[in-house]
Image (cartoon, rainbow, N blue to C red; front, side, top):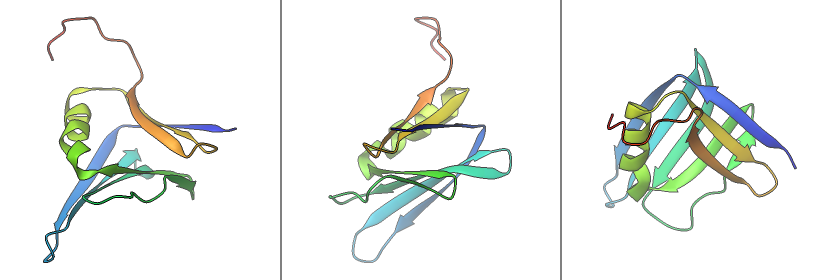
Length: 104
Protein backbone atom coordinates (compact mmCIF):
# COMPACT_ATOMS: atom_id res chain seq x y z
CA UNK A 1 0.00 0.00 0.00
CA UNK A 2 1.31 3.40 -0.95
CA UNK A 3 0.07 6.67 0.46
CA UNK A 4 0.79 9.65 -1.78
CA UNK A 5 0.77 13.12 -0.23
CA UNK A 6 0.99 16.32 -2.26
CA UNK A 7 1.15 19.81 -0.75
CA UNK A 8 -0.34 22.62 -2.81
CA UNK A 9 -0.36 26.40 -2.54
CA UNK A 10 -2.70 27.62 -5.30
CA UNK A 11 -5.65 26.51 -7.38
CA UNK A 12 -7.60 27.28 -10.52
CA UNK A 13 -11.14 26.22 -11.32
CA UNK A 14 -13.69 25.76 -14.07
CA UNK A 15 -17.46 25.37 -13.86
CA UNK A 16 -19.30 23.87 -16.83
CA UNK A 17 -22.96 23.81 -17.81
CA UNK A 18 -24.22 21.61 -20.63
CA UNK A 19 -27.35 21.83 -22.76
CA UNK A 20 -28.73 18.55 -21.38
CA UNK A 21 -28.90 20.09 -17.87
CA UNK A 22 -25.68 18.37 -16.82
CA UNK A 23 -23.14 20.36 -14.81
CA UNK A 24 -19.55 19.74 -13.82
CA UNK A 25 -16.67 21.62 -12.27
CA UNK A 26 -12.98 21.04 -11.78
CA UNK A 27 -10.25 22.41 -9.56
CA UNK A 28 -6.56 22.19 -10.44
CA UNK A 29 -4.30 22.16 -7.37
CA UNK A 30 -0.78 23.49 -7.94
CA UNK A 31 2.45 23.46 -5.99
CA UNK A 32 4.11 26.50 -7.51
CA UNK A 33 3.59 26.07 -11.25
CA UNK A 34 3.33 22.26 -11.07
CA UNK A 35 -0.13 20.67 -11.08
CA UNK A 36 -0.27 18.05 -8.31
CA UNK A 37 -4.02 17.46 -8.07
CA UNK A 38 -7.18 17.52 -10.14
CA UNK A 39 -10.55 17.51 -8.39
CA UNK A 40 -13.55 16.76 -10.61
CA UNK A 41 -17.16 17.45 -9.53
CA UNK A 42 -20.08 15.99 -11.47
CA UNK A 43 -23.83 15.73 -10.99
CA UNK A 44 -24.29 12.03 -11.65
CA UNK A 45 -23.45 8.65 -10.12
CA UNK A 46 -21.48 6.48 -10.26
CA UNK A 47 -18.49 8.76 -10.10
CA UNK A 48 -15.35 8.02 -12.09
CA UNK A 49 -12.55 6.24 -10.25
CA UNK A 50 -9.92 8.17 -8.32
CA UNK A 51 -6.37 7.66 -9.52
CA UNK A 52 -2.75 8.72 -9.32
CA UNK A 53 -1.24 9.12 -12.79
CA UNK A 54 1.62 11.22 -14.13
CA UNK A 55 2.35 12.50 -10.59
CA UNK A 56 -1.17 13.99 -10.31
CA UNK A 57 -3.78 12.89 -7.75
CA UNK A 58 -7.18 12.77 -9.46
CA UNK A 59 -10.25 12.67 -7.22
CA UNK A 60 -13.94 12.69 -8.13
CA UNK A 61 -16.74 14.18 -6.03
CA UNK A 62 -20.44 14.76 -6.48
CA UNK A 63 -21.19 18.37 -7.50
CA UNK A 64 -22.98 18.91 -4.18
CA UNK A 65 -19.55 19.03 -2.47
CA UNK A 66 -18.18 21.79 -4.70
CA UNK A 67 -19.04 24.70 -2.37
CA UNK A 68 -17.64 22.84 0.65
CA UNK A 69 -14.31 22.31 -1.09
CA UNK A 70 -14.16 25.91 -2.37
CA UNK A 71 -14.77 27.16 1.18
CA UNK A 72 -11.93 24.98 2.43
CA UNK A 73 -9.61 26.36 -0.26
CA UNK A 74 -10.54 29.96 0.54
CA UNK A 75 -10.13 29.83 4.31
CA UNK A 76 -7.62 27.12 5.19
CA UNK A 77 -3.89 26.82 4.71
CA UNK A 78 -1.61 25.02 4.38
CA UNK A 79 -3.41 22.26 2.50
CA UNK A 80 -2.49 18.93 1.01
CA UNK A 81 -3.98 16.11 -1.01
CA UNK A 82 -3.73 12.57 0.33
CA UNK A 83 -4.28 9.44 -1.77
CA UNK A 84 -4.30 5.70 -1.00
CA UNK A 85 -3.49 3.91 -4.25
CA UNK A 86 -4.75 0.53 -2.99
CA UNK A 87 -8.20 1.69 -1.89
CA UNK A 88 -8.27 4.45 -4.55
CA UNK A 89 -9.49 6.83 -1.87
CA UNK A 90 -8.31 10.32 -1.21
CA UNK A 91 -8.92 13.49 0.71
CA UNK A 92 -8.12 17.16 0.86
CA UNK A 93 -6.89 18.17 4.31
CA UNK A 94 -5.30 20.84 6.43
CA UNK A 95 -1.71 20.22 7.46
CA UNK A 96 -1.63 22.06 10.77
CA UNK A 97 -3.94 22.16 13.78
CA UNK A 98 -6.05 25.24 14.46
CA UNK A 99 -7.35 26.52 17.77
CA UNK A 100 -11.01 25.84 18.59
CA UNK A 101 -13.27 28.86 18.05
CA UNK A 102 -10.87 30.71 15.74
CA UNK A 103 -13.77 31.91 13.55
CA UNK A 104 -11.78 32.67 10.43
